[in-house]
Amino acid sequence: MPELTLTFDNGPTPGVTDHVLDVLEERNLKATFFVIGRKLQTAEGRSLVERARVQGHWIGNHTMTHGEPLGTLNDPERELAEITGAQELLGPLGEPHRLFRPTGHGSIGPHLLTPITADYLTANAFTVALWTIFVRDTKFPTGWVDRALELLPERDHHVLVVHDLPTGAMDDLPRFLDTAAARGVTFVQDFPDDCTPVKEGTPSPSFRKDYVTDPSTSTVTGAK
Image 1: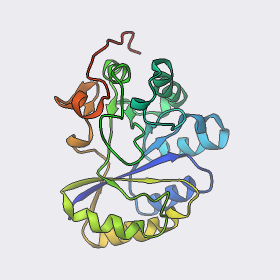
Image 2: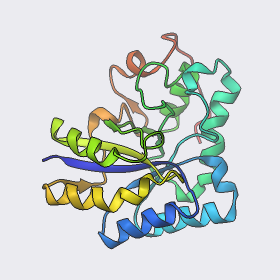
Image 3: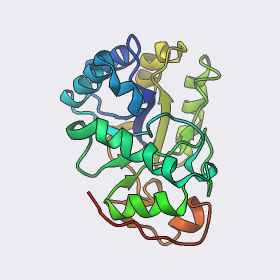
Image 4: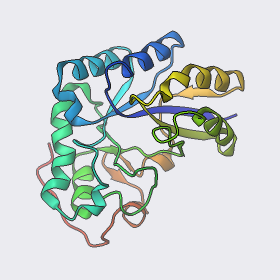
């Protein structure tokens, strides 16, 4: 059975993220939480992310508002604001390697980024973290465990994305973790190379072809 990296998107959500943190702590598991920037603007939301960081989980940027994929916006100012606004709110809670997960609504392809956002991410030493298992737990909160377990043997290292949202899906998180562990899955926190098309600012050879909408290039300066 493979290694599995656990990732939780679209939080923090009071009443859900704290449950997820309890479940992970009971099993001594480490995950990555890709958070929405605007949810850090509340004291309760920020407190949950602070707790996650204290427990050893990685915290990543999942855009400011989780709107349409950046590669579909055609609005350079808004595209950059989705990344920079969330990163500013993360501040020291974010990882030194600046984890960023674009919104893709499950699919991965050249709609994820535009040239200006791709340039910004590389110029500012971000790591872009994607996924291999997307179980649509937000739309189908029951049954996601079986779908995920069925897919696990397909490769040696999977990245699972589920959502700490109030859908009821996370009620089944303990069953998933315990069943996967019983089947020999090893939980890890790192990401496989093919899920990080940009690693600390260094893009893979196929990064722009695979994930950037427009093949033209632009230059972003002023790294910070």
